[in-house]
Length: 191
Image (cartoon, rainbow, N blue to C red):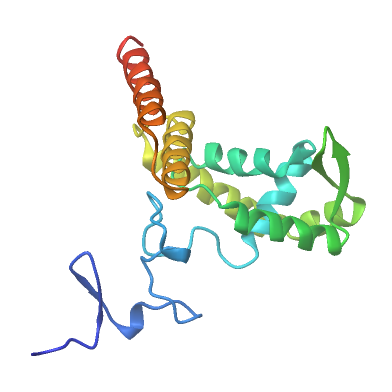
């Protein structure tokens, strides 16, 4: 039996040269999740995500979920950062004094501080470049599904996966899920 020492991903071999600086295979998203449009590189260069977040909260204070959705919309649905990336970055920005947090209806609301504004101003070229790449990604995506549709599809898939992972459905539960999915299909067809 012959074994290949190179890794395979969808029939394509990745050599050592196709690994990022952390040794991770390029083209394989973090945590094994596939992201449409991710390509063979990370979406944001090192430090760019924090600049994008600062730019977004400079526009107006936002909740973490709003930041995720704003990034997704800015790139035309080509990328959606996970909460596991956004929330630690927000915590870091808070610890650095770049973002201030207040409570708003039980949720954390992030706003830019004077220190964050100065940091953003000092790094405006990198921030502008990151925002431009986001616009390029949206333009390249072009006629793909609208970001709200992509988000809703991902929400449905996640909800189904989470529910099914909790154990088998009873016959009544299975019928209720099927009715909800059928109703959604009919509503979409009539749109």
